[in-house]
Length: 114
Length: 114
Image (cartoon, rainbow over all chains, first blue to last red; front, side):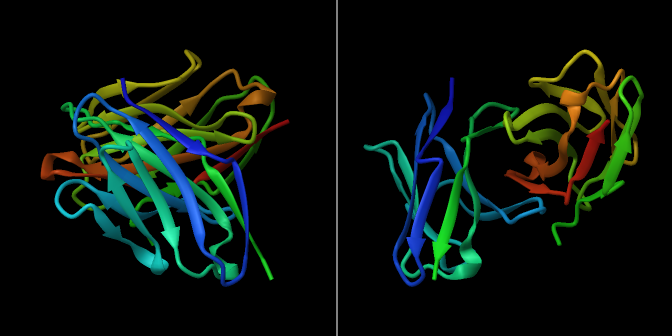
């Protein structure tokens, strides 16, 4: 069965610093991987996705993630944090069956300090 | 704007009551998902419908039920409400038939049970 682990339920960075949010997954089949962001009192918004092809995926708002099969990881990074990046971030993996239900991590709350 | 709409935005009701939440998926999306998000439980998958048929069930209580209509909109019915049902309820849609497995979320319905 698929599962997702997000290391660190809370991450705090200074404005302008590197953002690194960790996601590890387990999957018996090639996974499809997603990162979503949730701003306060809003729905989840797709940041980026990996399905096949290039393992470094670029998303919106300057975020990117790299699929590393050997490490079963899909960490989210941004070179320079902005105050507006403060939000909850969710990693998800989709199984390969007909259903392709998303399995969600518990989320990481990112705080950006001035 | 994800293209997924949910009504109502807010709902306040008393314990023991029954409510209906409504979701309209993005144009062309056949699959609809319902999620519950609370502070203590995080994001919980409830149920998925695909083109009118139930496709997957998650942590959905027996007091809850859902359906997807021929025009693809969906309703989530919550009955015999308890204080613990207070949460944000999200609807999401996707197009797995077109090989697009990412889900697009609506803005949510905030349910408060008093």
